[in-house]
Figure: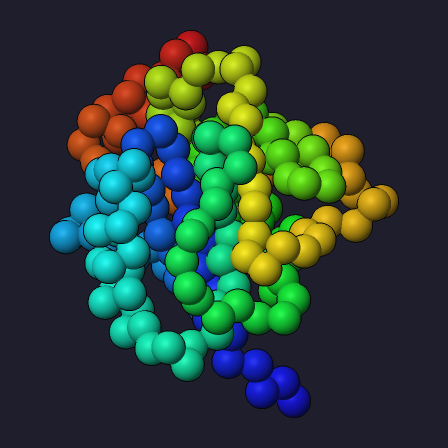
Length: 185
């Protein structure tokens, strides 16, 4: 039985927006900043880390494992945290997270690998305003540094299906009935 008390966090930086997630062993939980989904100024990291330390009830004895996914090249931190001896994130954790981003084509670039994903959605609304055909590059770095992927899976392209419960609002029902009647006729 593992007695590992390492706290795992993932940070997603897209332009000037920074989202932070706590990993509970099964899924990523978004840490809301003042009720919003993201911290608005990724360029003001000093105040972000102050907020983050308060939000996670940070103590100097805590041991961390960080994963950064960023639209910018290598993302580095200059803070004094205690990190686990080895990287605790694995490919399944990262794939689970990027599938939730709902970006149709994404390329994850790490120190020792590059991997491309194509996400297939069930709902047409998920494709709205997603720059169809454009591959978004996301750079991955971890603290402590370590391998996320083994050499056998290093350069494969993968396709993932995202299944969601369709919304059941009045407009959805109206257009669903219209589509059904056109398909029958």
